[in-house]
Length: 235
Image (cartoon, rainbow, N blue to C red; front, top):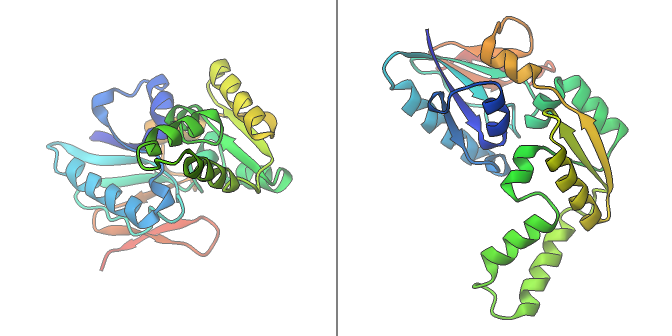
């Protein structure tokens, strides 16, 4: 059985630590979950490309529900395996239950991981620098650019805590998260993460309720019984 991985870029460092060869992974850029239909389309297109490779008969998806962006994904020739996770943060925390508990106990937390920090789009000084670089030529008036920066900050007005999910003992990224918290005038928290769920996706088995196995001819559909997704025959 030949296996390939399709993963969000947010998992790049973790997959490297877990020893997955670069030629076994197809990465998609972070942030596609902001537009779930686009995520669905891009992921399905990538599955079709990987599925056509000779010898591949299983594709592991390093994704979760991701705002329903994986709902509607179809298995073609290869079997698909996907964690039944809310999103990448639930995967980094090790379970949906822990993620839900964390959100209840610490409402208003914005979650950071090394991947999100390296993407440069999380709230803080690096995001501001990215916005300035991206839009400096569009806004000739400095005041208009400053208005854009301020409007972007308003997107995060409901948050008051920066929570670094540390699954790799990454002190450098923890310090960067703390700097983001200082810049946003938020409280900084560090939460122990784990790579166990991601590792089991790679190594198996996939027999427990944390994974959905989608056989050829099936598609992922939303589930109403609490496990986020299920597989049914694609009619």
